[in-house]
Image (cartoon, rainbow, N blue to C red; front, side, top):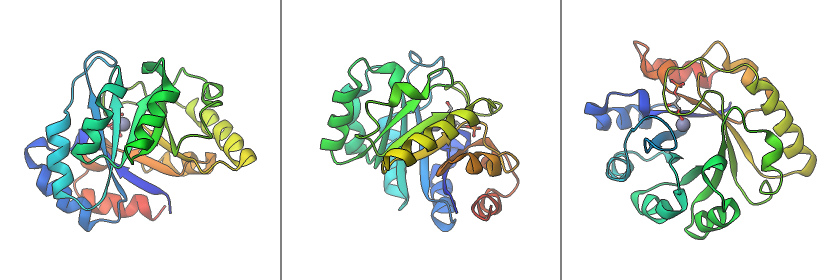
Length: 215
Ligand code: DX5
Ligand code: ZN
């Protein structure tokens, strides 16, 4: 049973409390919270005050995905807001190693996200320092996009490296994940799945979460 992280980006922002309750009652594991700055990605979503509210309304782990430039400048603010896991993009961090240390010193799990065009080999020198890789399977910035099939090869490659070196690193796959393609993503070696529109755009999100967890 893989870790499931419903992405709030596809949820009804007018009813965040209801969504938190639904997630708490469900078998989902984490709340995936997508922060966008309109600079690193061509979209703006939500930020620190919204995460503070979600944190207070849910008991689940808050998995915060920063799609922002200079994420190190905000790591402490997101920790205070309630992030348990903080994903920062490799492409946004000229001082990635320093930013990872910062996140860990603040007591959060450190995760590095990579875009679909970024080779897995770029992670080589930080894999021993991080808790998770967030493997983007769409170009970050929007929910509801189609899964990029080439990502499956990247998941397999990363799985092989992690297993070879015995790193305690989780592989999370984010973007375009559906009930239909989830089995092949899990077979490729993913440990955690993010799903936004394929959960919240269904009639019964709670039942969809159960279906994902039963895969
Ligand atoms: C995309 C975000 C994803 C997004 C996934 O930039 O990082 O987490 O919410 O949405 P779906 O599951 O609809 O592709
Ligand atoms: Zn995300």
